[in-house]
Image (cartoon, rainbow, N blue to C red; front, side):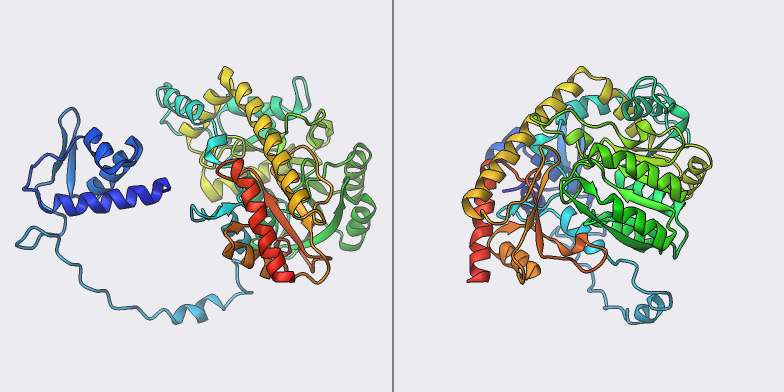
Length: 488
């Protein structure tokens, strides 16, 4: 049973038990509850917290947990909570007219993000999730960093709008290298990579303007562009990254001033931009008078057997063409939403103005915790461990695909956390994803990764979110059963 359902079940059981207690009666100890219900200390703590928030119990440090003096909202004569009156359903039909008064739906493209972020039931193998499983996260390092951060002098004071100077300096070195073109003054701390991407697109492109994007590309990029009212224009990608001949043609045809790309372990194809094309991308953008928004989301997801990584485009850009995105979230936890944007000149001031309107600043305790984390000797060890785990998971996934679905596996690189599968022409990828879910495995259909009509059906498989490596083979086997059931 997963932790969330265990907490709910225990809270329900304790709620019924507490109803029979007189006011002030002490509940059994945490150890007794653990033994009786066969749950972890965390489950007991969270269930007690649920009851305390409902006003059913009070916790007295050093003494225990007791039934509260009265249930919130009053009690019946028998001591049971008063039943809340059934609320009359409201008439929400007016919203249809109110929300249709502008240019159209603003949630277009959010469906793929919900699919990636939603946690599937425990019996479903998750080959879609966008974050490494909890077993790959440095939970002890994070807990220690957060505890130390909370004790730092001034940790709960309001931070500088741009971010803590020490953290900005660390990001500048991490992105541009020691002695590189970036300094702390070129960095803006953001609430993770998605927030950075949103700030960049909204700041650099006016509503209605074209924005060039890779094709296929990360659905979050398309969702941000559409929500911002800009027009994503696709530029095809092959195994060496974006097609620079088509990039130049797209700039000429659209007069766009922004190109969003993922040069390293591109999502979803896994492509790495070749050295020749790196130089071409910068040259083409300079000629067009355009910005390159470099989403470097996967740099901390390099596999243990990967060759040396290319430098970020921002490290070879003294002229402020590149606006670079970097985040600590993927390699740590979905909850450590700390990232960075780098830019130079008026562009940085524009980014700064957009972020302060949207969110004021990134909470200081999170920034302090990020500083503690990257300064910990265990940080480098965690990255090595993560790289080895991702390599092993990729190897298992590739082996399972070659055994179960050998015709679908295309080129792949040792980095990132996903594989891009080309399906035979005519395959209904949405129907296959649905059949796979019915078979107990969650995968992502390819169409949400395209700004226009897809050239072929695809699936994306993530091997980072699976609860254990052993489940990867089972997930691929379930996918094969769904595929065979669909194709006959």
